[in-house]
Length: 264
Image: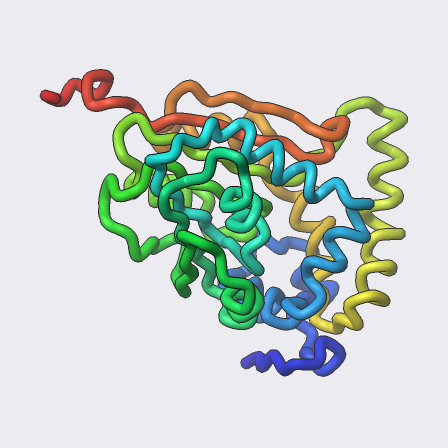
């Protein structure tokens, strides 16, 4: 149905006006998301840096800080994209022993593989069917990815499954500021200025930067995400707004064996 070439301006329209009315309700959402990211892969990081005025690097540093990384950690980065989160963790003063970045968009992965990471590797895989054994990793991260899952509950259940008892999950996702004046200014930028600017820089025709604000505004709020994490079995769920609530970091743990009533 779709084909993504090397030139973003050659990409077909993935998100048109009709589908953007309900981006999370599309039966073929996963296919559309994959082709959308493949279409914008070459310019993805440059657009993020410019559109966020460099704050994306700060958000990744906050993920690293809140993850409380241990040298023995085995980390899985879900929806790793071009590998920016993997590189942030790999370059931290205390870094995980091993890092696997996983994504289902091959052209995004191509960007990641082109910049090898010491102790890191990348693989193609679906967040809703993680190709990872039960209790195999101690840290799971996901940056701006859960909003793109075809089913949020299934994705969070998979993260819980692959975590060792006592393991941590660190998720960052866009959110909407709650202060009225800031919300108004931000929504003007997010709905009007950013999509136009991003399309000009990326030369994207897939609709990726029209999908972005629509997918954020129609996605679950922080309390709903907290509840979804709890429903997936996570405990100690912390909700940490950053940059005046433009993004939110969620940190949670998988219960230890003792807490779930298992023998040590």
